[in-house]
Amino acid sequence: MRADAQAWAAEAEQGQDALDARFVSRVERLPLVGRRGRPGGSGRMRNTSPWRLRQAFDFNYWWLAHAVEVRIDAFERSGDGRRLDQARAVYARIVKRNHGLFNDYFDDMGWLCLAALRLAEATGERAHLADAEALWEHIASRGWNTAHGPSVSWRVQQPSYKNAPSNGAFALASLRLHSRTGEQRFLDRGEAALDWMRTRLVDDRSLVLDGIGRTGGDEIDRDWIFSYNQGLLIGALTEQFDRTGDTPLLTEAAGTAAATICTLAPDGVVTGENARLDERGGGDAGLFKGIFFRHLEGLLERLADGEPGPGSDPLTPFFLEATDRLRLHLHPDPDAAGTAPHRSPTNRQALAGDDWSHPAPRTTSLATELSAVMTLEARARWEARRGGTGAGPTV
Image (tube, rainbow, N blue to C red; front, side, top):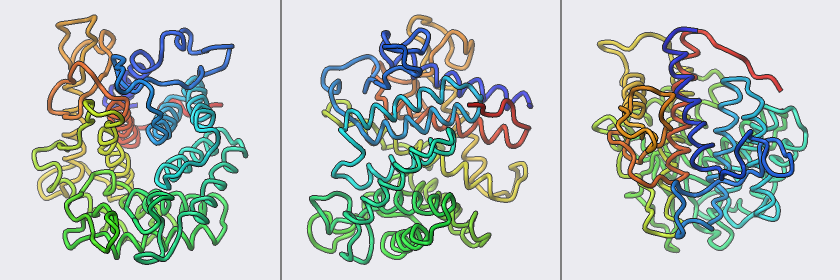
C-alpha cells in the first residue's frame, strides 16, 4: 500500500475512533463489547458531542441508517470485525427503537433498505436481505403512486409530494436489489424512479431539484438544491452503468457532479448545508455532503483513471482538495489543546464542523460527524484503489 493510502486509511480510522469516543456513551465503550456482552454494544449513539438536552432524545432513524453504512465502510477497509459488530448493533438499535422496520417516511426507509443490503453483503446473512426486500415492498406498495408521474411519495401523509430523496434512494436500492437477486420487478421500478427524477427534477444545469407538490399543487422547489440529491442521482446513474456499460450514463453523472461543484462549492468546499443545533431535530443538513462525496468517489472510480493535471476534468481535483481541507481542519481533541489539526493524529479525535474550511465549533452533530467520516472513508477508498489495497474484510 502506498504511503498516501496508508495515511488516509489512518485518517478514516481516526474518524471512526471519534465516533466511538464522542458519540457512543462511556458505558458502551471498553472494549466495544457493550452491555450484556453484546458485540458492538447496544447501538446507541448520541445526537451531539458534547451531549445537549435539546437534541438528546430525538430518534434520527435515517442518520443511524448512514451510521450502519459508515461502520461497514470501516470493516471493508480494515477487515476489523469490531466495525461489523458495530454496524449490526446500530441496525438492531434502529429496528428496536422504531418497533420494526417501517415508519411514515419513504426516504427514511429507502436509506435503511440500502443499509440492510450492505449488511447482507458484508455478513452473508439472509435476514438482512429479507429486511431490504421487505422495506422495498413496503415502499413500492404504500409509497408508489401516479401523482406527478409514477414515483415514490415523501411520506404517508403527503402522497402527492414527490421528492429526490425518496425516489433517489428507492432507485438506488431497487437497482442494487436487482443486481443481487436478478428479479425483474426491482429493475423495472428502479429504472422508473430514476427516469422520473431525470425528467421531472433535473434542470437545464444538470442539477437535481428537491421535489414537486410540497405545498399541494404542481410547484417544483427550484430553490432547494442540496448536495445529497445530486449524490443520489450520481449513485443511481453509476449503478445503471455497472449493469449496462452505457458510458453516456457516466457522462450524465459527471455533468451533475460538475454542476454541483460550481453551484454549491465554488470555493472548494460545500457550504450552506449546516446542522441547525438551535432547533430540535435540526441536524439533517449536516449529513448531505457526505452522501454526495460517497457517490462522487464511486463515479471517479468508474471514470477513466489518470493523474489530475492541466486539461483534466474538475472532479478529481475538487475531490482531493475538499478532502484535504477536511483533514486539515479536523477538530483536535480538546484534551490535547494546542495540537495542530494536521499534526499528531494519535493525539486528536477527528471532530468536524459543517464548514470544512474551518475547525469544528464546540458542538458537533452526529449527522455532521457521519458526513465527515464517510468522506474520509471515501478518500481512503480512492487512495487504496490507486495504490493497492490493504487488509480485506474477514467475518
